[in-house]
Length: 240
Image (cartoon, rainbow, N blue to C red; front, side, top):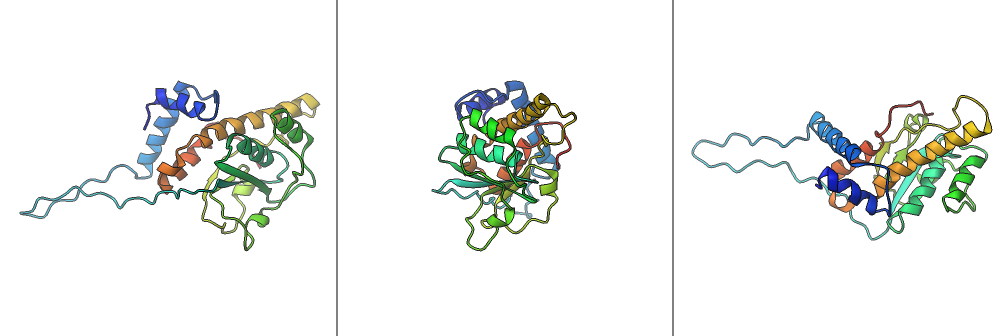
């Protein structure tokens, strides 16, 4: 793998600019990832004793399944509670930065009646089209005949705690706890806009890292671990 010093700039360059993940943070991210690998028992296995009178060959674990390369774009579904703010922002951001490699969708466990106005404003300011977007229920993506999904990422604790269906395509899943901008203290208009802006920036930072992952060269277990780690780059916060 690339050194921390080289990895961070390359990851940012892959998405066309600075991603706000400096060399020190990248090194810390890699260190935490290595610690996690050891904690879950992914350290190299020791070779078994060789039978007497025979030279043994080093024991290797069975090769892990590589995440399937695909000619189509990877389908990514973002889930939140209402599908009126965070998950819609994530959908728009990934469709912008993912170019032809990703197709993003979003849904909620209890969809709101309409999209939050601040969500629409932020998306438009980022140059992301908002025509026709509306809250949807996640059942649309689990119905018979629905397109295969490659990733399902929950952004709210409510969505993560839901008894979710078996998704078509056996996607990689992870929880990226994201602060709910609607659960803020204070009701001033500027406070609300600030909360939405922070949520947008947090998602944008994570998704810039996500699109830079070498998906085709990772086995499924490693990919799941990397995607999970992206969602741990912030202090825990209540999100429902």
